[in-house]
Length: 95
Image (cartoon, rainbow, N blue to C red):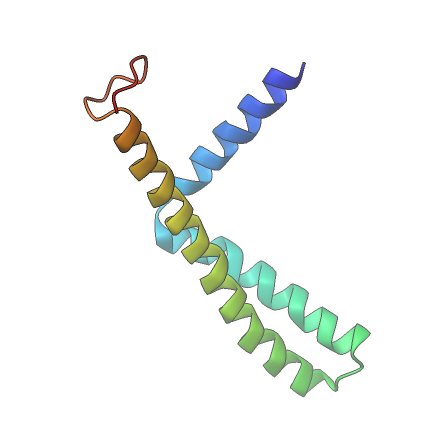
């Protein structure tokens, strides 16, 4: 049932994009900071203090990229939808 899976991903994407920006940052930031700290300390053999500093630095940048990319992609999709359906009716295609 490929249609169900695609619909599920679309619904999840739509749910995530409709969350307030503060909530998106609040979800992404801790995950990215912890993941990057662990990466720096374990894989790159950084001391705990330096690894934590790098994790926070890169975690903030990753958070900005993910949340900013989410906002830009949503805006692009909405602009495309408006261009294809200027009257709001998605059943007709007006050029």
